[in-house]
Amino acid sequence: MAGNQARTADGTYSTAWRNVSKMILRPGISMMMGLDFGGLENIPAEGPVILAVNHLSYMDIFAVALFTDRAGRYPVFLAKSSLFEIPVLGRILRWLGQLPVYRGQADAALVLRQAAKLVAETSSCLIFYPESTCTRDPELWPMVAKTGVARLALESDVPVVPIAHWGAQRILPYGSFVPKLLPRKTVRVVAGPPVDLSEFRAQPITNALLRAATDKVMWTVTGLLAGLRTEQPPTEFYHPAVARRKLRQDLRALQDATHAADEPGSPIP
Image 1 (spheres, rainbow, N blue to C red):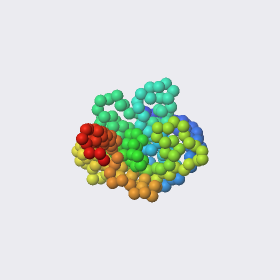
Image 2: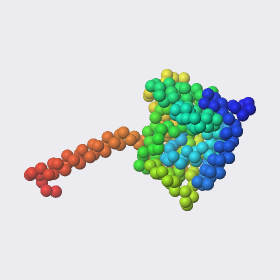
Image 3: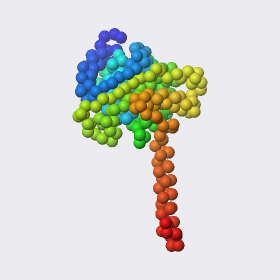
Image 4: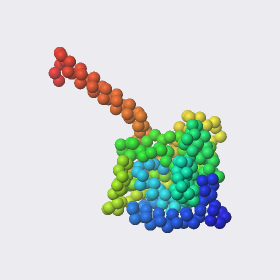
């Protein structure tokens, strides 16, 4: 890595700006939350790696970022390419070595292939949320994930380290905008060994293969989360679309039963 300009969105970053961000964020995040870390040794000290993380709250982004920093790696996120075009913000993102995702393209697979190439070429430690948004599971277990994490890993032959966390949702529940910083709450974060995806490599990348590989990653994350919560996880992932469909069916059945009871001659319960 030469000089102060080693990588931007095209593969370089500013060492000086990364150091400034560390000086600001390390104490800032520690003031917002207590932190209990485990499994730091499972994050490779160098080389490209994908950290697959469950998502409970926008506050967990800070906890996982500091966890990554504590492991000796600089956290990198995939950001919408349009953010890089904003004059001040775009420059900062480039200086920090964050990676763009060109979501305007119609082919989602091509977008992820480009992202995988950037991760591999820049030896990034990429924090990736397979669920794409905060879980909608009522019990806050990981919900069914999109297959991007598997495509990223298989397209680039980059290891995937599973990470689970618990506690950030008590600081900033999903849907809230004002964090509850007092009393100070502890966020627990743990990393497991890289997920063994060897059975999926050197095969044609199909939707079925991507789904199987993604589910293997997410069940590993769920297992880590079960350890943090000391609870038994569900036997299947929550699926928002399936849950909505079941709710509509239940409401329709209730309406049909109500109408039948209101008809003349219906037996009085």
